[in-house]
Image (cartoon, rainbow, N blue to C red; front, side, top):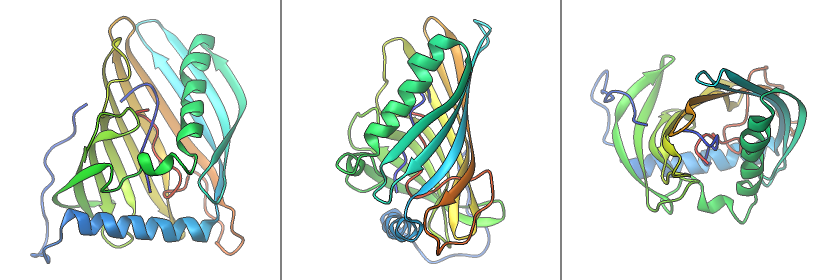
Length: 251
């Protein structure tokens, strides 16, 4: 399971997470991450890849500009992604230089030889357990993810891991490496929702503060996602895979 996210866009995170309820057994961050990796691998194998649709919306209020793109995605069983732009409108320069570049970046980082270098794993991050909390009434572990190197495909932030399914339910942060001198800061948030046997991203929001253009916001909505495996029950709309479908707001 990996969390990458490329929007050419992603700061700081929210308030400190608190523990709730009765005293729970001591759990270490590396234990949670090991279970996350194992469970994600099992879900990926069961799904056999997936298909789905995304809507990208980019807005810059200073320039009064807006771009929108509708994209279909097909993910092979090995995690390789293929994108097909179904329609695009609005700010042509942003569609070409930002949104299409995001698709190219995600295609590149989805390749099997590259994926291990961007995954949420001990090879790429140091993890610190901040505490426990609840997301939509489900217990979660809140973990700080500290990148081990400056890499635009890694992020510095937090992940919320479901304590029962060991799936990422939320990710938030900034790129481990600023992608450009012209970028002051980038911050992203990606949220997931459980549908059937899988956890699917439902929305990604990223904000980039640039030296010249000011604030640019990019929102990605995920819908009509379906696992390729016929053995897996049909999933509802507004969903995307948690295992291979990573957040790409910081690439």
